[in-house]
Length: 152
Image (cartoon, rainbow, N blue to C red; front, side):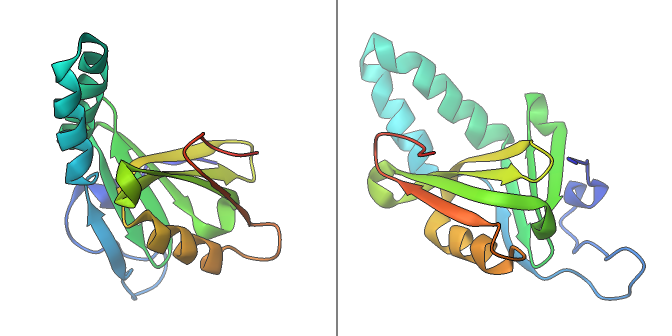
């Protein structure tokens, strides 16, 4: 059910399939900058070095695109992996706050059994509410969690 979307390659609005209307882009950018700052501060300890490397990789290659029809995440080595899901594919939303509430992680559980993970998403409360609002039917539930991690 996950598919690659070539429209995420450019900054131009994606064209709807079979229609002349363009998608309204709500967010098109990378992870929250404080994720990188906290990661770099972590290099003061040996244990924090792997966390810093992860934050650097996310800052360089992770990009989110949230529109009125789809959610796309580009990541992987040099940002070559693109995954796009429509709101109709989402079964459940799980999220956790990070960075003293400045940003958070969100996992979209899909009806086909897959999941789309969005790490260090800026203003994630807003995007979680948007996803919950646009998911069809009562099947799209939300699980909020505290610092302990994702809830079930």
